[in-house]
Image 1 (tube, one colour):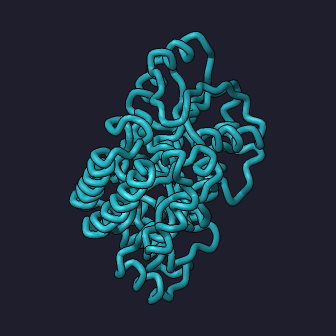
Image 2 (spheres, one colour; image 1 turned 180 degrees about the horizontal axis):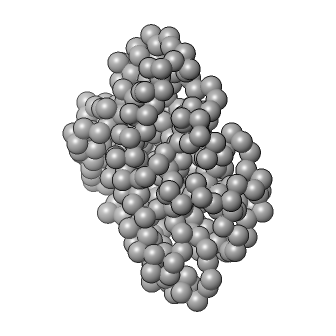
Length: 347
């Protein structure tokens, strides 16, 4: 699943065993150290923590993009790019869109041509378009933006912890405690450049105000210490190089096996983020019904979203604490399903 993800038993234990005030000296010290670790992991100057989902992090990003005035550009190649567009529309951001089809990579030459002839203040995009798995090239987009003096905002909700992310030169970015960081959902992160603290704060709700977070030692309001310490421990696991190597190994294995079996897979694998495999079902199989069947057999995949049902595909997401043995079992199940379908069609 892309969320909730499978958790290491020790992460669960820490969540249930934690009992500490968010106003204790120990907690303030631990938040300070953990913020340093988060920033170092993605090469960002600052990060603020919020109780909420990754979408809350994007709402904070949108508030600060609004302070820049002028026009921006939102890149869309899937459901979560569309969600950025919706969030931007709700708070009256002024923007254009640059769009391509689900599962397709952006044409970066065309993107630069559009940026060059326009007077954009900012670009906002999703690093990994989770609805397909396509990995949008953050370094390429940063280079385009810096060349044309455009600020960069990026949704890194699915990438941080799953694949290397470098936020150097990024104005604003969002992340979350679930997905790649392999903990419980419920903590949003907003990474930001030092210049953000000098920007206007007009109309920004106090809870979302990054300067207010800075002025209150990064704990302005109640934070669940249970969620925090579970995340802190999970983070120690995902920063081990072996973690990302394991995700890629499992992803490569599943993709290769399903491709050999003749499954249709969305997009080009070399353009996808390791850990998300989108399986397009033949007309004879309803993806939602297959997802339900998989769940009954204790294989939890991503199948319930309207965009998945409409396009008749489901996703195998290798996020969190995962083991190759479980991947083997899933492949064997799908192999049997495919063989049964082939026999049915042949008869």
